Every structure is written in structure tokens, then in C-alpha cells.
Image (cartoon, rainbow, N blue to C red; front, side, top):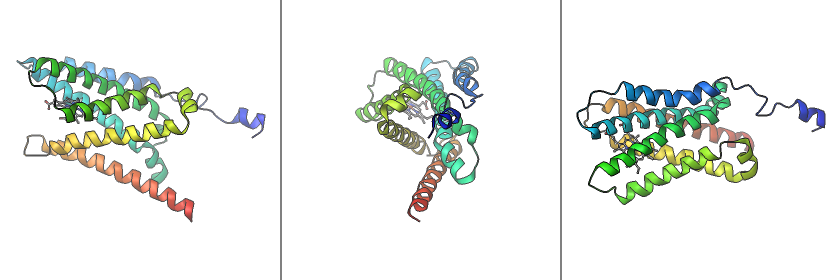
Length: 208
Ligand code: HEM
């Protein structure tokens, strides 16, 4: 590439991302609204449970948007806005799920039963991966980490997906909101199938 071509090639910085701030503000706004609109619970632990549910659902919705952005564009030619703003959607997800973490700590402090090891290690790893992904969500980190960046973000994305799916599938029993968990599970499974389809189509294209 010549110097002139390089100068004319749009970089991350020159591509407009008009929804950056609305996306970044969206997550704290939803958390704030949920606090304001919280039902009148008599016990503090019920309030913690409510916030755990709100933050988990918000984080999952944002994670799924980032999860399906690229395959949606590849397979159907739609979702360019999602792809362009994937980094900010990921950061908004990290904010919502950090609030989930805050309420997990609240729960642990307020209840006498200790958290099980599987929950601690499995859930803890998910938070650590998510924070590492958020900390490396910059052009500088992408350039610095190279292939490792891709590995970290692919692993983190799928691990978070897995923990969400395990939580929703575990709530599929005869509860009031089972239909909601069925829908959330379906969204996750369709997202995975879309990614697998995009992955295998790209591999096929390369070999033919
Ligand atoms: C040590 C780690 C964690 C603990 C102790 C924990 C605790 C909880 C609790 C107690 C609830 C239920 C609130 C209720 O129904 O009243 C909840 C909900 C949930 N959590 Fe966590 N959590 C942890 C980490 C995570 C992680 C890492 C994820 C996902 C990556 C996650 C996803 C969810 C989901 C999907 C729900 C269900 C939301 C709903 O009912 O719609 N949690 N969590």
C-alpha cells in the first residue's frame, strides 16, 4: 500500500460511530431506572434479587447483540451499525454485569450460607474474563496483543454465553416466568447456530 492509499484508507478513528455515547449511557440509565422503578419489597434481599435479575437480563441482551453482529452481517448483509458499535455494546454489557457483581457481593455479605466453590470459580472466571475484555477494548490493545487479543475475546464471549445459558436453562422448570427463560434460551441457541453457520460458510469458501 502506498503512503497516499494508506492515508485514504479509513481507519477505526475516521469511521463515524454516532451511537457510541447513546450506547455507553444506555446501560447506566437502565440500571438507574430499574432502581427508581423497583417494586416495593419488604426485604432487602428481595431488592438484591430483583437487581440481580435486571442486570443479568440487560447484560445478556447486550452480549447477544455483540455476539450476533458479525455473523448477521456476513450471512444476511444486515447489522452494519451493530458491527461498527460492537466495542461500545461490549462495554455497556461490562457495566451492567459489574453491577450484577456488586449485588452478588451484597448477597454474599447478607446471607449466612457461603457461596459454593463451583459458583465462585465458574462465576468468578466469567467476571475476570469480562473485565479483561473491557480493559482491552481499545485500538492500542488490539495492536499490542495481536492474536492473543482475538483468543481472549473469542474465549470470553463464548464462556459468558455458556454461563448465561446455564443460568437460563436452570430456570426452565415449572416457574411463573418459564416462558421468559425459554425465550432467552432460544435467543442464545439461535445466536450460537448463526455463528456456527457463518464460521462453516467462511471455511467452505476458503477451501473451494
Ligand atoms: C459468583 C458469581 C455469581 C453469583 C453468586 C450469582 C448470583 C445470582 C443470583 C442469586 C441470581 C438470582 C436472583 C433471583 O432470581 O432472585 C442470579 C441471577 C442470574 N445471574 Fe448471576 N451470579 C453470579 C454470576 C453470574 C454470571 C458470571 C453470569 C453470566 C455470565 C450470571 C448470570 C445470571 C443470570 C442469567 C441470572 C438470571 C436472571 C433472570 O432471572 O432473568 N451470574 N445470579
